[in-house]
Image 1: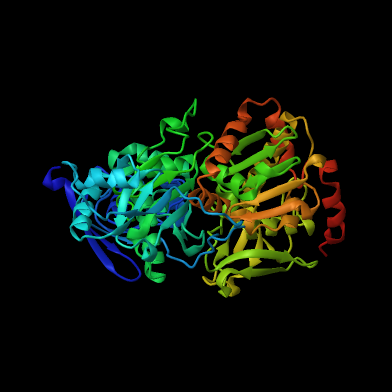
Image 2: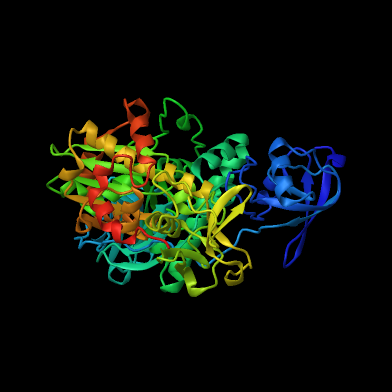
Length: 626
């Protein structure tokens, strides 16, 4: 690039000033990311969310885009969107929102069952003495013969030479599915470890397990570093597609996240990362594709053919995962482009595949995945675009489940809200579980009607903002930023669309299977959002079906527990193949009347009141607001 097309950009934050060189070809947002400066962003650089706004203090910049013009009216004349603007001269900017490293509620627990370990990695005692004349055989050939192995990693050859030269009588030969990958001098004093990884769109959880005993020896979690490239998978796919370097950045981001978590677990528990020989990764199909360097662009478009669905294994050193370099990284198999390996792991962890009657698995996130086990034992699975609202994104005061987020809400008979905040801090905003409870109680207290419309507009707890009504959960004087925290009419509409997608998807699966809600004997709820979800509030809203609450079972992080199960027992391979083979994916857009079902489900709790007769009866004592 020509020298005069590169400019010095000075960046001011609340705590420091940073200088870097930028070009005119890429947006300021892209260049901040490449220099490790994370800026809040929800839409992946489309100019929709306004979270990546900056203040232009000095310099020449590209003309505002149409998206920016709308946000400038709200944010002020000196505001620009870093994902849209380019620097055309030496410039100075101030970043409004640095991406916070906050204390977060990340789901790492799950229902772990006792497993008799039968890992792919084993250590076998091998006697070397007496070493007799070998008739021209080398150390490698002698070891293969004595250990009964046929395959080996070439990197073990220097280890063999050294150990043979030491005159050891007995050694431990470590193999992975029959392939020699390591040699240890004393097998009794050596750790044999593996790691399970849940790669979520938002968070990553890693557990390290003792492959001999099956015990979890360490666990940690963090935000997926890919967040800085977009909050949802579609934003990241779009980002990956723009430049070859971008998919490399996405791949490196998830690998760095995994490596940092493994390193923290190893340090905290006094382990040796060289003793970790296998990593099993579970996640949606897009996340696993990014891990292996595919941008998922063609898979995100019709006919939605994923890059792979089978269980793949890659040497750790080839992928850059910092365990024993001769170890392997394995993926849990997926079902389709939008029903990923995390759902396979959920099924395995929950025991849905072993349940005798009609049962449902629901994993709620940006995409809601639903699996119905029918009377015949077949699995019907689908994915619905619930959207980010249920995780707090895209709402006026929505946020992740981090310190300062309101996670639970109750509204009394006078319309006053009572809430619980993560970290016992002053509230900053509302996360997904808090939003669901707030809207459910707004309906219970007649603040909104069955269509979701705010009907009280003269009360002190209802105000107008940007020409729409909003309910005040937290008055300005009680919040951390001295601003009201509210649920707006637009927020309610977004949550209605999300909850309708989930319930309509379930009803569609039931219709395809020619069964009914009354026949459901159990519902397994998996995933982070589901774990913190209040069942009563979700039923009031019409997100979950009106069945007895003792039929709901919380699985916890089924993706992680399923990955652990696969890591610890090679016997699960046949179960997993059977799960995948028995699962039929239902494409909702091809099902007649799905749209009609969806529209009915946008009502609270539903347009067909008979579907929620028990919930409505239970809600009657609350239906007041004087």
